[in-house]
Image (cartoon, rainbow, N blue to C red):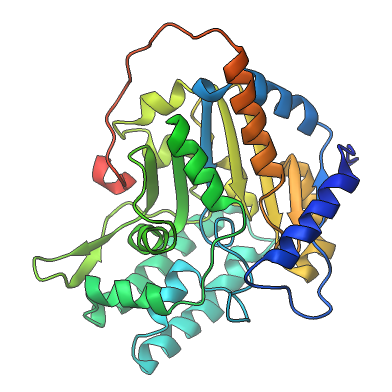
Length: 340
């Protein structure tokens, strides 16, 4: 795919500067982050900016999108499932790793169809969930799991959440991980979430003693991440559909569909191609489905911060619109499974 160069030298310089300033510096000899912009990026960016604050909706994947690929203590950063598995008994970790060895090759296979993968992924999730339930872990365990986890937010994410809170812009965190875990990560890393932040993910069920007893029936896997199926019956869905522009950030092909079903006019997709080896193999695939691709675990800024700054500036110049009644309800963290 041909790439449009949109201030590429400036962005590349800023990306390298952000990476050097990060709390988790890249491994010695690792390639510098690079930004690749697709042919539609400039036009989509213009539409998002002109639409202003009142028409904007931010959608984030969580694992290795909001968080970094490399952990702050070195090595691979923990995902939601890794966070809760790490402090469970060794036998549980070994069984989870064995399941990963069986099912992960199915998830990433280029030869198998989505239709084949869908039921296989649901079996994988059910087996891992059962393992966690067997351990008798508690809410208190989950909080400690997060405190001990090798996980950090990607540069630019906390700033984007703060910006959205100031401007009352809805944020959807759409994850095939575990909603309770990611919500606790964000609570510990950035503080309480704004009421307009909704978490759409797999949800743990705890009993009155705070012991994990199961998971909500609705399963979200990397292949079922679209708004219509995952939150079409949620009370806040109509409110999100009223926002005509979406900025979407993810780190896998399945994340590109997270806005599907919202009926929005413009979806500006930003993809993180984190692994150095994958960057060589998958760049063409990523640039075909994302409007901007940041490689080698690069920061979300300056691409995201400058975009939001320009959206804010455009809103300041525009005449104030007539007030429109809000559609749907909102809770501090609304997990989709609650809204069946």
